[in-house]
Amino acid sequence: MKIYDASQELINILIANGFVEDTSRTYPEHAKRLVGDNYNPHGMKRHFSYPGTREKVYFDYINIILPTGVQKYNMNNDDLKSLIAFCQLSSADRSALVEERYNVLSIPQIISDVVREP
Image (tube, rainbow, N blue to C red; front, top):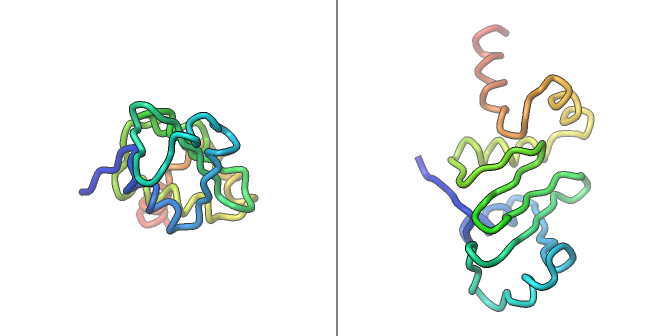
């Protein structure tokens, strides 16, 4: 299973799936140092948002901070798919999941629970 850390590869996947980079507004001093492909997660922060939602992803150096407060050092394929699916849900559905104490990475768990007990 593929593992993704705070890297240009993960950034490309986020952007390809609808995320927008907001680093220049959130971390202008880090954005100024981003010229070309010189991203170094050990020395720079990045910020991404999903349009039309309040969902944000921060690369706090090597830490990945996801919506609902989840923090990780890396993500696997299921984590990445869950993040994208969560952000694509309606606001009401995201709120309902959070109220039920699910987090942004719970989508595979929810699916397996439904398959077990429809």
